[in-house]
Length: 157
Image (cartoon, rainbow, N blue to C red; front, side, top):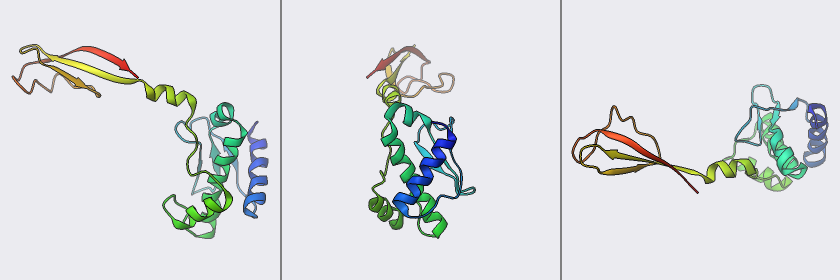
């Protein structure tokens, strides 16, 4: 599917589900990483993450389009178009659009591996476990004020 096919699909969903035309541009944006799509307030265009179509199929893509069209139509009507607004929640329920898109399988793998860093004091040998790295030139041991060194980095599920 290319941008022109996506444009036709968005226009068709807009008429069928909302009874209103989509008068702006819909396109795939390869820079989107953590979201299925976005509605641009300034241009009224909709951008979609192509990975959702490739990895989760057309059904998920249609859900994302419907979600973004809720933002689109409410914003143009001057109603509450943000996730927290009652107008948005009501329209989402009415048309059956999902509130959130399904997480991509590739992102689940990245998030399941957690990093644990282990630092040790060179003076008293006390060990520290941290999720985030420490600047060893700035921070010292809390017990004896000795110098810290990184001794291990673990990847845990």
